[in-house]
Length: 181
Image (cartoon, rainbow, N blue to C red):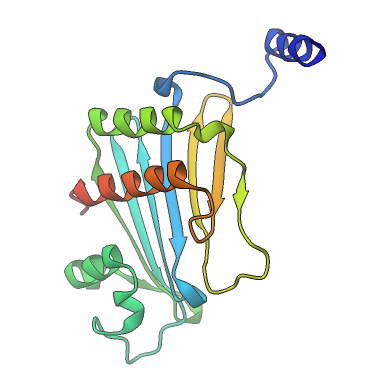
């Protein structure tokens, strides 16, 4: 009873509990991950307004870098991007090479992802599913942005369970369907 009164009082005062039941409240869905040893990373951001971005980074590259290197082949999205848009990659201090490409996501695709996230209980998931000391399995970060803030979940080696894995796979599959340029 005490918890119910606290929850009711909190709702009346507009506290920042991430409670809502409408996937229409989600304005952004994102996912990022690094490969083992932190040699490359991918970030995908999908927005309700139809904009989509994908950023690939290859870390600490030498001058002999090629499309056949294991570093490029480690993330298929980035391998494809590197082969198609190699001239668009920008070399940074320390040898990092990165590029961001943009695309469009259909509202129906975004709504399907948002609904899946609500149905799978994303907002009630723990913030971290990681094992301390496990160094060779970098986590996947999945997030949503909604009117009251941002919810991010870190999932290492699929420790978040099948519902989180389904969300991660759906984001990746949807991103594969977008024509990034």
